Length: 364
Image 1 (cartoon, one colour):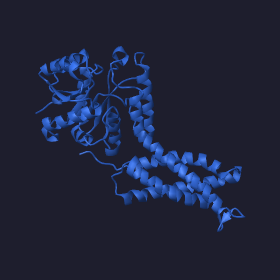
Image 2: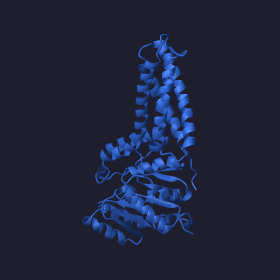
Image 3: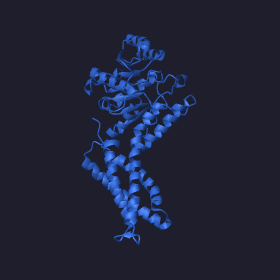
Image 4: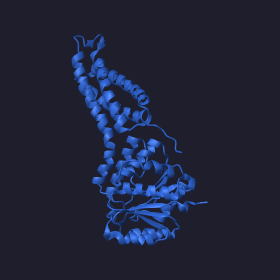
């Protein structure tokens, strides 16, 4: 019977230094049996570190000819582990990923391995504390911001979104082979995928270690943060562009339907303008959300019914609120509509995220 110390530990590495060798030695001394190091195209000047890594009896090295990024290195290692150590039938529940720069101790790595062994259907995150005096400002600020973005946009409460210490179950490794992202954004996409597949997330508190204020990290706080936040940019683009379309059409239809008594066919012109504008902008928004934003796997007819039921409710709320507030305060109709629709946008997003596009899959 296998035991938790047979879970393979994956270490992607690019242009390493002596800290990689120190970590590998510590992992061997801790009794960890399988270590997979990925040389992500570090080049000849760093070949000696990987040669020394292969000298450890429990370590094997996979190589990229050129630098392809952390995401690609993880996929290479996932594929290797699935082929080498087998799927769930092998008795090994998954793998653990760790960074090569000494941030993760063997004790914490073992703690994540044990947690995965006890919870083979969950993603395990080794989470750091970011309020200590030794935490670099860029790491603390970036993680706290991303944490809030995750909480709102995805409904995920994760205390350390950028941790490289993760224990990943076999079925999730298989899914992650197809997830987009070649560099640091891949780890963000991994967390997003837990939402799509309803994969539980469990956290293990770990030591917060930053050596030389994390100067050796290849994470570029500007360039790579942009890659990460671009993952969320599509959410905002869809909603903002839909709002612009809706407002322009609303203004146009207000002009078309405005009558001498402020009505069109006995119906207040604002109600008519809201309905026609919302129908057109809703079709536009639905198609973008279905294909681009949420990339839904649900049947389009089922999703469309749920979306348009939500759109009707949102449209009615908008029409009633705008008409009522305009009657109270007067002014330009568009100026009344804008704050109302901003509020309804946030409410609508939450409903779309949780009920319209989210297909809940139960882990095998």
